[in-house]
Length: 216
Image 1 (spheres, one colour):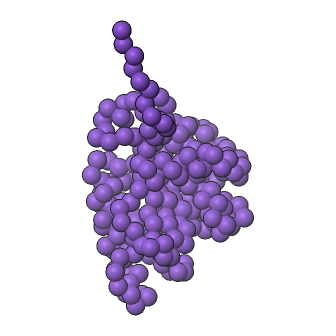
Image 2 (cartoon, helix red, strand yellow):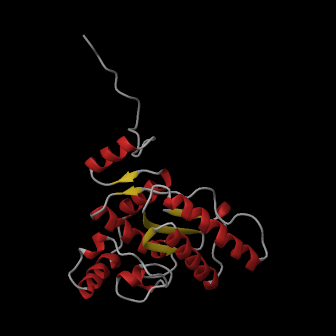
Image 3 (cartoon, rainbow, N blue to C red):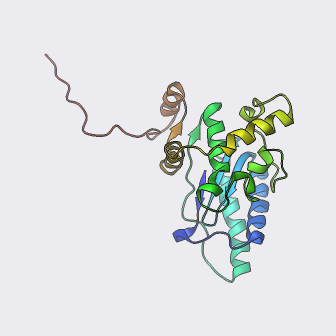
């Protein structure tokens, strides 16, 4: 899930803002039973990887988060108006390898934005917690993460290896575009099931004009 600052404006000006956001996030997600698996706080946007307990959970949580954080941000910085740029953007991701790749994508976001040199250098993402280092937010580990090892030490070591090798530009672009466009990510069978349950396209439309059907 992607949250962006209104008009491309920064949503965090210092560490106090970031800590306030995570506190508001935890309150909203706990109330609406949304499990957070990964996060990255960037100057002008926020990446979140989460699983709701109900179909309405994320929408209600984001509304609550927007009200709570916007009020404190405006009060602290003497401003008015919304902090966020319209609706949140999100992709539906299949459990397993696609979810693990999305987790790594989120944890590598501060490096792609030029904020830090390595993922584990960021104090405001979930990379450090996934690698066994203290984090600013207590996460709900996805089942995919638990499959990295039988012990915490094995999982930390395995994830550290994964996150320290930057994803290729093509993969990172695919994940970012999926979130922006609302596309699904996963196996062909997962995409087909998601498409049947959705009321709009969940995959890119084929390029070019449709082929003519010749009969007779």
